[in-house]
Image (cartoon, rainbow, N blue to C red):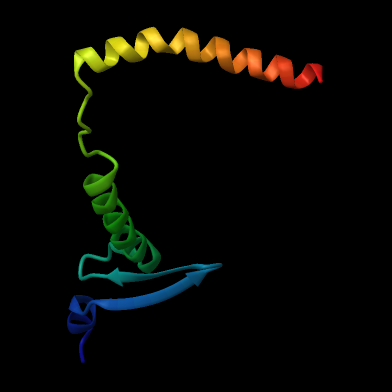
Amino acid sequence: MTDGENKQQKREITYQIGWKKGKMEVGANGKKAAVPESSIELSSRLEGVQRFFMRSAYRSTPAPSAKVLFVLLGALPIVSFLMTWVLVFGLGE
């Protein structure tokens, strides 16, 4: 092998720093390109989580009609007063 052939071969270097693993490729031009393995695994997990949220969390919910909302708005002060009265009565005993 001559020096010209050695320079054109790509070398792959595997490294580990703590829990983080990765591979470095040293190309013909001498520049390094690092691709951590943990980031590839993490991105695939995040895609699954993202798909789950897109299917469940961001689904549009049906809104109640205006008549139901009006009745609930009128009943809210009455229910709040009764619940407060029950709590005060319970503390008084």
